[in-house]
Amino acid sequence: MFDPLFLALIANIFLLGILSVLGVLYGYSHLSARRLRKKPDAPQKLALPPAVKQELLSAAEHEYQGILDRSANELQKDLQKTTTSLSKQLTDFGTSVIKDEVSQYQDVIKTLRADAESTITESQKAVTTLHESMKQQVAEQVEKEKQQLLANIDTKLGDAIGSFLSENLQHNIDLGTQTEYILSVLEEHKDELKEAINGNH
Amino acid sequence: MATIKLPSSVMTPKDIQQLINEVRTYMAWFNKELIKRRVSGDKHIISSAPDLSPATKEFLREQKAQGTLDRHGLEQLLFALEQQRKQAPTVTVTLAAPAPVQLQEKIVSWFRTTVRGDIFVSFQFDATLLGGAVVRAGSRIIDASLREKVLNPSVSFAEVLRRV
Image (tube, rainbow over all chains, first blue to last red):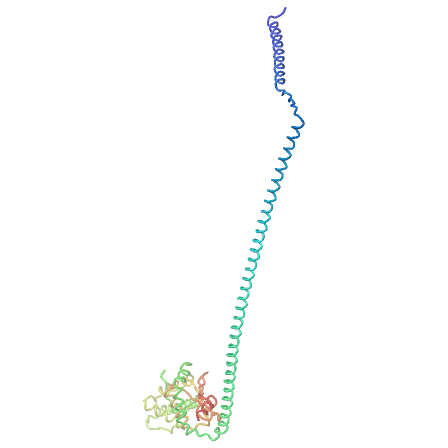
């Protein structure tokens, strides 16, 4: 009716349940014991007489006051030192800045002065050069006009004399006396005539 | 073709044309005489020669002296004269007054001796030249007149006056 295997299984399950419960109980009791061990002990109070208390208090106050006074003095000294040092540094800084600014200003003034002097010198040179150039141009112009006037006088004089000769000599011309002259003129231009005649033919 | 030496009195193309005409007249008479002699058989019958200008006579005399004055020679001479008339260059010489013939001949002779043997020279006059000559040859003009020297002197009058 009941399988032996089935019965063994039920028995095993029952045993496992018992073991589990025992394990849980053991673990809970272990943990509880630890908590009890960690809890500190409560402090124990000590009772002193009031006079002693008061004396201790005064001494503490006195010492505290001394410490405060000493700290205040030291602080004051440090403050003075700092103030002095700061003033000195500010003074030095101010002097240095002013010195630099003055020096720069002087440099700028020097540069401007040098530039102004140079500009004035160059302007003077340019004016002198221009003056010389204009003088030369005027002299050249005057010379040119003089030469032109002389040439005009020359031409007019030549024309007047030419007209005079032409008017007086063109009548009663005797070619017989000019024969040798005409032949010599032809001889003088012989090469030109040969070139003109033989070059065209 | 060789240039035929012309007399100095034959100066212009017009003169040589006249010479050609007269030589042609002479040649016609010469041929007529030749025929007459052949026909009559008498070598001595000669009719009077035609009237020719002194220049033509001189020219024919010179040609005869060179031994070229037969019928063929005359034909060749005429042909050469025609060619020369067509091809020879002409220059114009302007003088200050009408030139006498002797001066013209001297000038023509100078040109034919110095420049070119077959050249023709025509003459003009212009009183304003004052003296000397202006020669025109083709497109070239050579002004060697006194007027040119007066109007375009090589030394200015002002310069000369300064030296005086």
